[in-house]
Image (cartoon, rainbow, N blue to C red; front, side, top):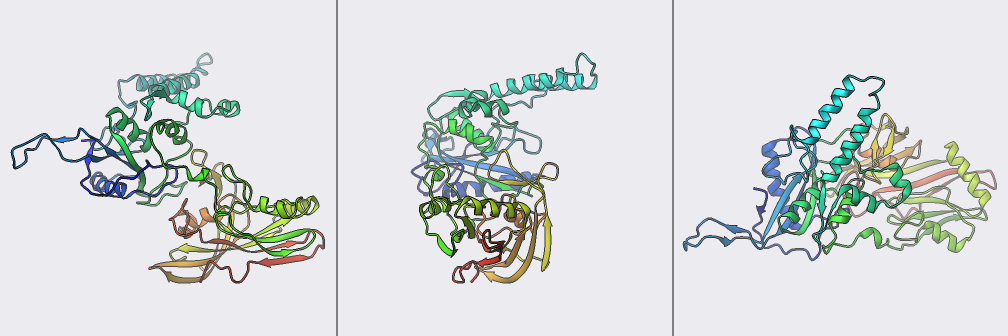
Length: 468
């Protein structure tokens, strides 16, 4: 049975879920609890993303006779569908879950036959056939994506190639990525929506969660909810959600315009405190940032470095080009020293240590980073335990973090990843768990003044602390 009943008086949401940034609706939480019983029965051998789609149906009836003797009575209008990403235990035919959009796993199907043919040619290559496997694989991938005919809320249909080219209209991107990534269309959200549309079920809300151990390269926490991936799913879901009333994209609404505090200022530089939730430089949805704030006060100003949106703390502002280039050279030479304070989940075993894990961006799920021992850039973080405590019923540790390199999300990844500390920073929505803020602050910065040549060491105001 693909459609599972939800017996509840929980009210429906007014809008459908924006799948790339959401809080799970209570109906989804109820559906997920039901789904977990089935997952436990299967007992998967590896970690997997699962999803639920709560739907509304006016034609769902029961064949069981009631005490009055009547049958075929409507027993519920709300139900849910369940899905898993890719294959589950090597199969895609589990009766509890929605089927794949297209089944390429049939042994006698065209896709598997062609795969065997390509494999056979690979084992008997000659000078005249050495180019064939690659071309045949590309042709087969193109054929496969053409079989994924995705519906949307308006009842329209397009295949994955059409959707991909319509979404990525830049010639540069189309040249670099002429086809969607492998596995596109096999994630939870597209499978769920496709089945709902095919069976005239009205989508109500949706959620996805991770079950099982985390992969080695990225960070996933058992039982935690996650947004749909962007690389594979953003183009597809942009198409499939058309025709639905969807929650607004919070990324298009801008950010809270907060004040910046000047900590130090002279003719060449300023040091300021950036609050959590404020951009360092203008973004796509909002141009209010430390950079624009500084431009209003010092028209020639430039930022020699940045902090993540959710990270608070000390930033330097160069008031003219000479100071900017001087500070940039110091950052490039790694002579500028920064100290961060972070509150992390759990207890860190060693009082002091160094984490050395190479990082690279996840091309299919930006802005996430992954541990990449083959193509990643070296990232080094030194840490020292400052204090441990019980906080809101859980153990936490205050750390001093000293980045020896400056990779994107370096401190967050090194704290959260199982090969690092395995203790996510409190409030890290990407790599840990949500809280009222990300408890990471650039506490101090030491550098050579670009005009005087003197070594300076500046600190956050004593009244602004992430640890009470």
